[in-house]
Length: 338
Image (cartoon, rainbow, N blue to C red):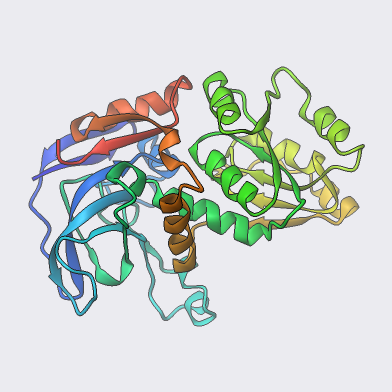
């Protein structure tokens, strides 16, 4: 079968690989769609070579059909599913405290072990969520990032009337903004990419381009000098980390969502002076996946509005180059059967 394989920084290739062996407790999935995400991009750029084992089949945002079952599970052959790609040890201190999703020995499928950028994928049966008929494969492939957004909003304790700034209007930043709005927040998105600015506007969000308008001045005008209640730092860019503390009111909150591969400069004095709170938002829990599925299936979050291209599996490298171009791109999907 075919798989897109990471071979080193900015090197991916379509290769013939053996179909996965389905072990006890596993199912085999025929992968229909898989999404390229920011973490995959970090891997592609070589930022995570100290963690991943090369060669690696990346990918964890996906939707597919179960074709073989070797487990005691309600999931049946023919079911359409998405994978919650976190496999925990159940033994470490984090697991014992009930935080299995951030297990200290976490096997994140598609990063620490083989992922979804292949025609067939064998995964533990207990990591599956059923996809309702209301969602096609394209929408299903965005359930995982929507689950991240739902988790972020839950961690930030968003409630009615919260004023928030989302730094970064990429796919995850947009999903976070949509999920926060559903929970009652008024969200402004800070973004520099013109295409993404227009996409945010089309989804009903106010936007600020910080290259054209001073973001701190904008927030001070909006809040009469108080600052916003909440900032989602989703950009993963040093400029986002630098400005986030300038935007938050006294005893406000910052939710750190974006991945910063290198430690950024952060104004810790602002945390002291304003008694700010910082909450880390890493992955998700089963409840976040289930809510993400409900939101997408009901149409409350239009996940397909973020899809800008679907490419054959052989063109994964082109998808990553699109993401790096900074142009008219949001979410790129792979057709894993073409």
